[in-house]
Image 1 (tube, rainbow, N blue to C red):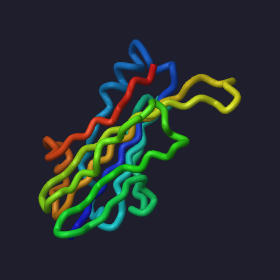
Image 2: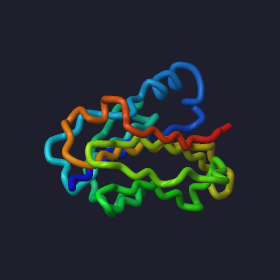
Image 3: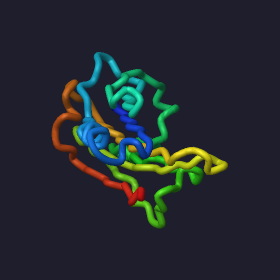
Image 4: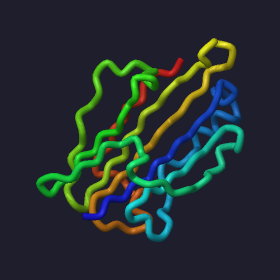
Length: 157
C-alpha cells in the first residue's frame, strides 16, 4: 500500500518570537501540494527565519525521516520519534501511535527548543509537522482536514 510523507520543519530564533517576524512565522503553512511522484520518498519542506520563512522543498528517503512507520493487519502505524537530545519542551507522556486505515491521513506536530552547549548563543526553535497518508492520494490531500490531528507541542518559553 502507498505511504505518502510530507515533513515540514519551521525553524527560528528569539528574533522571531514577536512582531512582524512572528506574524510571518505563524502564517507559515502546515501543508503543501505534493510534487509529482513522491512514492518511496518524503516531500520535505524547510522554512527558516533567515529566509523570511520562504519554503525550500526537497525530497529525502523515507528511512531518513524521524517517524516510525509500520504496516500490519491492513493499517499503518505512525509514531514520530523524539530523541532524548531533543526533549525540550518536556514530554512526560507521549500520545500513543496512530493507526491509519487506507484512505486516512494524520497531521502530527511537535516543537523543540535548543540552546548552545555553552549557553553563549540565543535559543533556537523548531516546529516539525508530519503529514502522512496511507493509500493512494491526490496532490492536494494535505490541504484538507486530516483524519487525525495530534498536537504534541509544548510551551517554549
